[in-house]
Length: 424
Image (cartoon, rainbow, N blue to C red; front, side, top):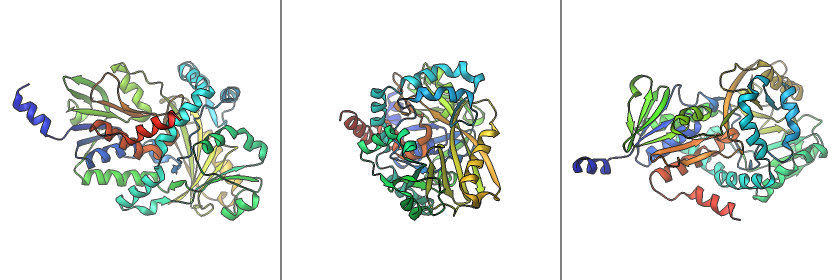
């Protein structure tokens, strides 16, 4: 390289491509741009239109228990036989899902659960405060609802089935208040009467419109000089000290100093040609959103025995949840969304006459529920930020901080917390 060109490269801002404009990718792009990097955010759709569009808006730093917990093996028959099971695997997809499923079951080993919980706790730390500051910075403080999350159980026997998860929360200092029926009604007078036990996490929060939140981030990113390009990135090619994109339209052949892959469930296919074999699977999630009805509850309410989240949104009430393992190509199973709507209407009679629309999105999940965040081993300039599963919104800002710290050569506070907790 000509010494003059080397000098120019050293003095200019790092050129970074962020692939994927969900809440994680958009957060990363904004964080990098705020620190002076020259950033291009790429996605085949507009920012926030993918999985981030339809999530339940939960900011849940207490979610340290991975999906694969001891005893999960007992749920496998239901996964295969009951299409309305909270965790369902389509028979046709079983051969392709089997390697991931075996890793998922192996992750339920108690020692692995403890290790996953430590890493999740470190990444979650300070999430509510970070999102509160971000909503203020973006001029949308009204999107953050700080009234906690209320998990409901019919009785002590139902609560006992989740005892392992609650023990992990308390081990990591999560504040939990157990409520009787009177305590439940004091918070949520419309709570279904058959729920007699409540677990209240007062310091949790809810984003009342996840799509509008991501759009506000994207606007701030563009206003700060960032570029947003609608394109499908089909491949990444290392070329000397740079990375070249294989993409549609104007982005094809563009080169960057660094690339951050935050493509959600599509990250695995993008990275495989580079020799990176992520154990990543889509856990397809559904929601039913009722037009109106947002005042039926005043905070996120979890029907824990049904694994259903209900959240007040700006434009109604959203019932979300369930996990379906069926890959990226299969059409949505409307029965699953209909089941969500049915349970919500049965639980809250005020919803019965309200129209609802349904949605399905692809959560990118690792077998141990721990996202992959950081530099790609052996591939300088390639960074990974995927596999956030059910907690992409919760962990988006801390993930962005970790990527920005690492890429720009600064200390990684989140990684230091993780190391401390893992060694505790």
